Length: 308
Image (cartoon, rainbow, N blue to C red; front, side):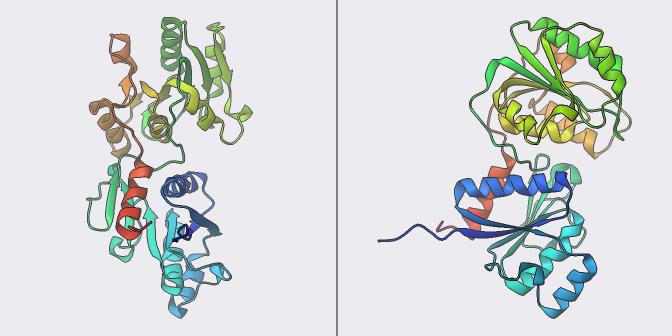
């Protein structure tokens, strides 16, 4: 009788940046849904250390660990470590986002479309960066969430404009209980102006009062989510959750890869701008599941672990 397949050994190299580690965690969780994995998280050694390790064909950071089937990293600091680890211990290298080194040096590059890299034999192009949110089916029509950003290099911020949109949504949908949270970039003046509107049905939870995982928990239950256009990672997390996603509109400073990515979501009708919604456009969830981490995990398993 054949037993259960051995777990897939995965090394995840970390650079200490939460945004990068969230991306690799998303891929790891999606892999674990398809195939039982044995995960080992390793801080990425310095570039100089990795060069010496690569030349010597060794990787002391992984001493005592089982040989990996996959070595995954996000962020430029992980790229030399990926190459050194795979040369010393085997396994396939998977890099998230456009690498700083030639793509042909890695077994798989998972690159968001806004980076402008064409798909290829070892390159998967994704709609946005991966994230650790998993789709759920427990969304409630009477629960809503606002995710508020702030000043950014790509969009102009205007307290009054955002507050007016929040007020318009809350007032027009009295049957929905909304929760609003902020980000580290949200000006204090925004919350002061919002408080003056007297929206008693809106619960405000500033980012300082949220614990790790707070957003994911609320995305899992909220049937509708409104996100400011500057909060690109939050837009993709909301879409991945399966909620209907609306866009609180800001002014673009200049055309760029970030603004083009948001415009592509609007054109694909994956998000609904506030102006369209206020003119009668429906706020609807994605017609098909939006789960780029699962798509990438499927590619990996189907091509490299077909017997799993």
